[in-house]
Length: 382
Ligand code: GDX
Ligand code: MG
Image 1: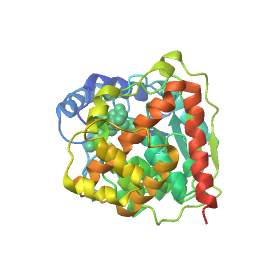
Image 2 (image 1 turned 30 degrees about the vertical axis):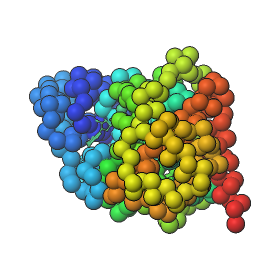
Image 3 (image 1 turned 180 degrees about the vertical axis):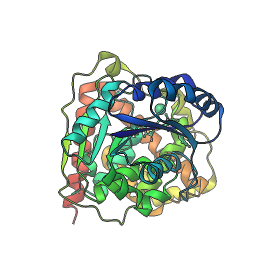
Image 4 (image 1 turned 180 degrees about the horizontal axis):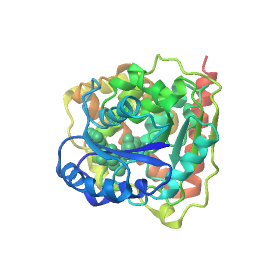
């Protein structure tokens, strides 16, 4: 029997409450927990609705504010870890599910499929979704790239959506993750990276299940909305670079279904708005830091102060840049944060205009090939 958790911050209470009801309706679900970042309007609306819901379904529903557990910016990580702690210390349910609160395509199937994979004996079940070729730009160019370059022999590069927020953990897996101090300290957007890293590091068995309807949720505009997430996701990978990961993990990925035309045609971000970001917020120090990078990168970025340039940032050069960032990037330094953001934008724009432009099927093939090439490069580079 299971607990379902929704971490939330300033969400539309109607969407969250609909998702709570979907969970309560499921026979495997014994309790629902919503963990808020603070007592915001959503928190108040959900709290007010809970007594009736609890009575109607005959199951406990709780809404709590997240505790301060970690050491970085207090964010989604504190929310998820507060839920893990609650699950382990205050309940005796066998499994815990996490789902983002803003999903509008959530259904009973998401819970059922996860439960079925757990019934087969997997300790962790991760949901994955069809994504458009210009969506998931942090996943591909930060997380999967880093996992491939740093832990090429592990399962990490092969996890479809390593920073997805939808997953099931058995009680045992939840205990392993919560007793990992690296997980508990990660209070920010890096939490998804840390959950994935820790499950692989400890050799937990992982099933990935495919949800064909996709994750429809709040959307972003220009890539600037993703800046904090990008920085925290990169810093999370960087903080782990010397750590060991188990090899030979049991990992099964469900074969994906046909992808809807709508997803194939979706453009993941505002390209014109993003071009301008390359011209903004320059400082002399950023120009100086570019001295650490290959000539092509330095010259390209500096020229972008006048006119956006990005065609130079192909996958080979990005791997080099990534290695330099792993060594020198300082998460607390505003110039480094800005520079990482600009470098990533050049990679995203280069990919968009030379790869994604050729169509969905080609782009997906390219991205998977890119990860495999990074794994190969890492395994064979002495
Ligand atoms: N308790 C709590 N505290 N919840 C938070 C906080 C926080 O500080 N910040 C965000 N959330 C909730 C939010 O309300 C939502 O339910 C969920 O966390 C995800 O946030 P959202 O703003 O919807 O982010 P986004 O871009 O949809 O990212 C999510 O999906 C990504 C992905 O799968 O691509 C998020 O789970 C990412 O970590 C993940 O990479
Ligand atoms: Mg979302």
